[in-house]
Image (tube, rainbow over all chains, first blue to last red; front, side, top):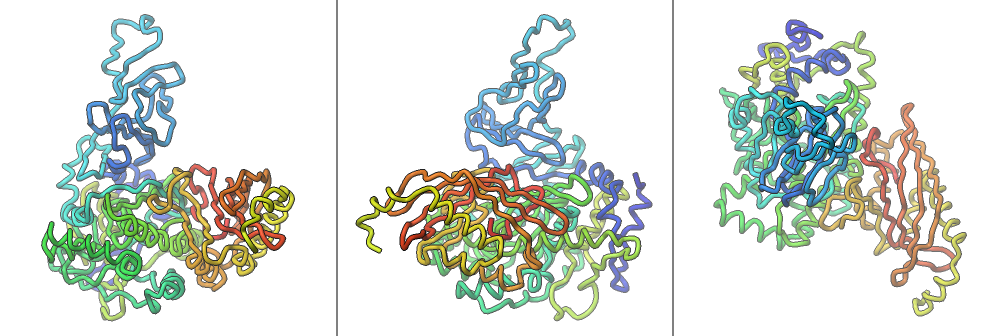
Length: 439
Length: 170
C-alpha cells in the first residue's frame, strides 16, 4: 500500500502558475483503491438512503454502503437503524431480500438464529448447548458505528470516532437544506441500479462537469429539446466566478463548501432560471405556479427563488452527488479500480398534483439514467477514459487546470473537480481534511 | 379498419402470426432499421416503456422508470440513435434479439395482450452483455398484421450491471 508521501506525488497543484494535473495511476492502481477504502470511505459520512424508502415499522431495505452489506430497518419502536447484514454466529447474510414491508424478524437460514426488527437476537436453536459465557443479549445484529438522519436523509459512518455530521458537512448542510426545502421530500419508488466500467472518481468529475455538457450531451440540447419546442440548441452556462477569498459563499457559481464538498451553483436569488423550467411550464404550468406560490408563502420570495433555482450539481464528499436541476440523488462505490456500482434516486415533493409529478419524472427520464438521452453518453465517455488509461505509462497526467487562470469568458471552470481532488489528496496523505480547497 | 368485429379478429389470430410479427420486429432492431421499427407503433397512442429493475409493476406516472416514452419521445429517441450524436451507440452496438416462449395472454379492448421471453445480447468493445426479461405487448390486429400500442420491456436483471445502460432498443 502506498504511504502518504507516494500519494502526495500524484497531484500537481500550482495555484500561482495555474497548473493542476492528476496522475492517471490513481484510476488504475489497486493499492490506491485499498488506501481510498481506508482513508476516504471508512473515514467519511456516507449517504445510505432516505426514510421514505421504509415508511412504516417493519419496512426495510438492504444495500451495500461503503462496501458493507447493511440492512436499513424501521423498528417496531419507530427507530430507523442501520444493521450490519451478517449473522453474529458464523457470518451469513441474515436478510437476503432487496426490500420488504412489515417484517417482524430476520432469520438466518444457516443455523436458524432469529433477530427481531431492532436487530436483537431472540432465538438460538439448541441454546442449552452453549456455556454460561454465551451472552445472547450481546449478540444482536451489529449496528453501524455511527448513523445520522438529517431531514429524512440517512447517513452512516464506519468510523466510530468521526466528527459530528454537522461539523463534517460544513457549508454543504445549508445547500442540502436548500434542496430539501422544495417540499415534503420523498424518494420516488423505483431506483436506478447500474454500473460503469470506470474508476469511481471519474464519475465525481463528470457529475459536476459543466464543460462537457455541450459536447457529450449535444443530442439532448440540439435534438430532444427542440423536438419538445423548449430549446433552440444549447447555450453554455455563464462562466463561474471564482469564490470569495475565504473559498466559500460566492454569490453564485462554483463554491467550495468545506471538507471537499462543492456546489457548481450556489443557491442564490440571482442564479439563472432552473434548467427544468421550460419543460415543467409546458406540461404542468398551473401546478408549478401553485407550487411556487406555496414556496413563497412558506419562505418568502427570495428564499423561494433560491430553492427553485437549486444548487446546480453538487458533491457531498466523497460520493453523494445531488443534481438539483433534475432532483437526482446518486451514490457510487468502486468494487475494483475500473468498475463502480451506481445507485440513483429521484427525490421529489410528496403530494403534488399528478401532472406535476409526471412532468418532473418525464423531465428526469429525458436526461437521467441508463435509458435517458444523456447518461448513457456519460457512461460511454468515462468507460472510454478508463480504456485510455491503459496508456498511463506513456501518458501519465490528466489536466484539470481549466479556469485556474485565463479568461473566464471561455466558459465553465473545473474548480469543482480541483476541490474534490484537494480534499482527496489531503485524506490520502494526512488523513485530515484539506485546509483550503479553492483556487 | 372497423373495430366492431374485433372479437372475431382476436379469435382467429394464431400464435404463429404473432411470432412472425415479433421475429420481424427483432430483425428490424438487429439491423438498426429503426425508422421502419418506429412505423410499427400506433403513431398517436404508442408507447415504449421499461420499469426499473426493482419495481417491475410500477406506474410510470408516479414511479421512476428506466424508459417511459410516448410517441414524441420515442420518435426523438430514434432520431437521436440514427443521428450520430448518441455516443453510446456511435459506433453502434451489435445486438441480437432472441425472442421465444410467445404467448397470447388475453385481450384488453381492441388490443391483444402478448407476452414473450427475450435474451438480447449487446456486443461492444470486447464485451458481451446479456439483457434478459419478458416483453409485454399490447398489439392491435389489422391489415393482416399488427400495430404496437404498448411495448413494455420487463428486465429480469437485478440491476443494470455490469453494462450500465439501455442505450439501444432492447
